[in-house]
Image 1 (cartoon, one colour):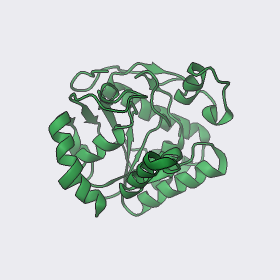
Image 2 (spheres, one colour; image 1 turned 90 degrees about the vertical axis):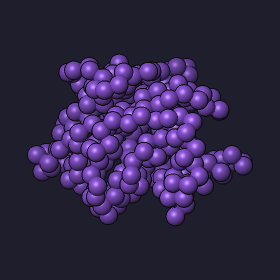
Image 3 (cartoon, helix red, strand yellow; image 1 turned 90 degrees about the horizontal axis):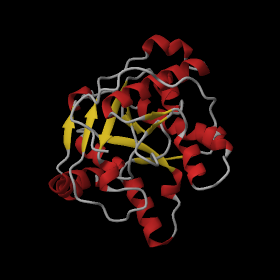
Image 4 (cartoon, helix red, strand yellow; image 1 turned 30 degrees about the vertical axis):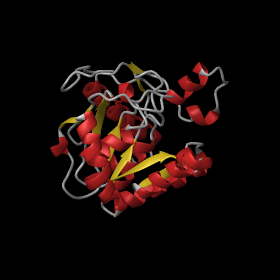
Length: 255
């Protein structure tokens, strides 16, 4: 109920008035049935704007830190994320991450829409980074389509570290559903998961027009902060980057 009231009555109309979001390909989202919506990740506000424009509820896997904050702001953020159908995603790897993916699987088996950021974290510089295989594993195990969506301009609305947003227009492009059913009998194969994840990132690159970097965004963030790499940041072996077209697939990107 809270989700619907905020989206339809309070928060949604205000955001639409201020930021005038434009959308392409919204009909690529099925009217019913399970699917994964895989998005690039430019800003904290991605998790607000994208579900706002999708007719059906979207349950997001959000980083677990959003649910464990302290103080008034931290508790308010945690409450907001819980009330807006978001699930904590533990990114430390191993059993903790597996449990988070299991929660995402529950959403899919119940016929819902699951939103996920394959990069695992926000881009530090508006480039598109290597996708982790969790999204591929979920898609293959659940046997559901993956709908890529490119968020456009949200990094200019709310850059990392900025508290108050800039009022400017944003957009999003929903691509055609990606069908990986031919790989379903190889759902546990690591190489197949890597192939599927790279295919998703290739489509996100095509839709967004972002420069692709064959490295995990979490590793880049640690390096920029002058910190040594942590195992969880690069928990997957590297492979060849996706190659192919670089058309933006719609209205030009503004990032």
